[in-house]
Each structure stands twice: as C-alpha cells, then as structure tokens.
Image (cartoon, rainbow over all chains, first blue to last red; front, side):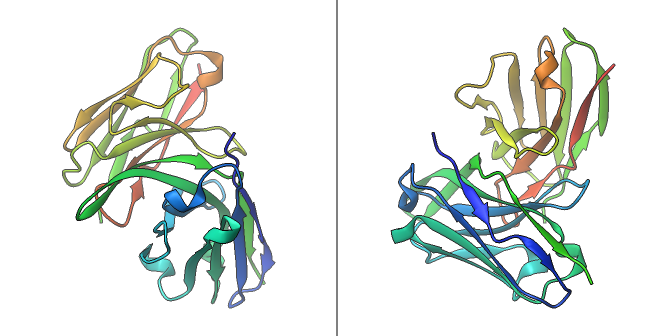
Length: 126
Length: 107
C-alpha cells in the first residue's frame, strides 16, 4: 500500500525557516508529479506547490512564491518543502501528496491527487 | 484565479438519505474536477475525478456529475461512515483551487 510520510513540522517564530520532508518507498516515485497542500486550523484545503516528475517544472501559489521552494530527490524517493520568511498565516497542517494525470506531446493533464500523507503541523508564532 | 464555490456549507441529514452537494466554478473547467472526503484529524481521501469517474475502492453510492462550471456530488443512501467534510478541486489551471468545503452532519 502506498504511504507517504511527512516530517519536519514544528513551532517556529515569524521570519524563521523550516524544511518539510516526505518519503515513500512503495511506488515508482519518479513517475509522478508531487504536490504540497496545506490546511490552516479549522479552515479548508489550500494548494501550495507542485513539482514535475524530474524536478524540471515547479509551480507555486502566489502567497508562497519567493519564500517556499519545492524540490525532490528521486534517488531517495523524497519530496521537500523549504519554507523561509514564515508568517503567522502559514500556520497549517501540510500534506505531501501524489498527483495523477496523463501526458500528451505538449501538455500534462492532471486530474486528481490520489495519495496523501498524514500531514505535518507547522506553527508560526512568537 | 478560478473560484470554487460549494453549497451548502453545512448539510444535516439522516442515515439512508440521498444527499447532493454542489460545486460551481467561476470559469469553465471542462471536467477537470475532483471530489474529496475528509474526516477530522485525517488526510483527504479521493472519491471522484474527472467530474464523474469513481476512484477505485470508493462505494458505488457516491457519484459525480457535471461539466463546464456546475458540478454535483451525490451520496445515495447515506451511511454512518459518510458523515464528513467534502471538498471539490479544479485542475483546469494554476493555481489549483478548492471549494470551501461542505460538512455533512447527522440530523
């Protein structure tokens, strides 16, 4: 069974940094786009960032652009989210997840997030 | 950005009821829509993708429909395990966006 496991969450002061990690060894990691989705306390889901199978394309939600960096190490089946200049409003549970879709010659069509980790909690507070 | 609006925000229902949740996109998204179920303290679970395709292992009482801007998730004969919060999500364009969620409560 595919199981993503996140780590790296914790309490950090505003302006600080954290690096989240996510790994799984039960599926062919290199075949999938991967994503981070977050959920603030008592709130809905918010997409944060995506990374292509080989790491060559990355996309970010506007509020994290320039502060967060998504990356991956396919040799280690691992996904990362480097979070800098953290703000109180970044407080959330962060989920690592797998994206499914299909590729045509000029475009990749995503259609679901089918496997989710259990989440890691990031709290930004002074 | 594409706004996703779900209705209702909260729904009270009884076991055995038929429940319908609506999701409306602010722009045409074809059928690039998924539905998720989330229980307290747990990660979301994929139910439906491409608007109407049931994810493997999901009970057949769940169904999705719609295209363009208007979509529905229907649960036929609500079961005790179905009391949860449901989210729609669009994959038509970045940034990917979710609806605000619909909480299905016990009546």
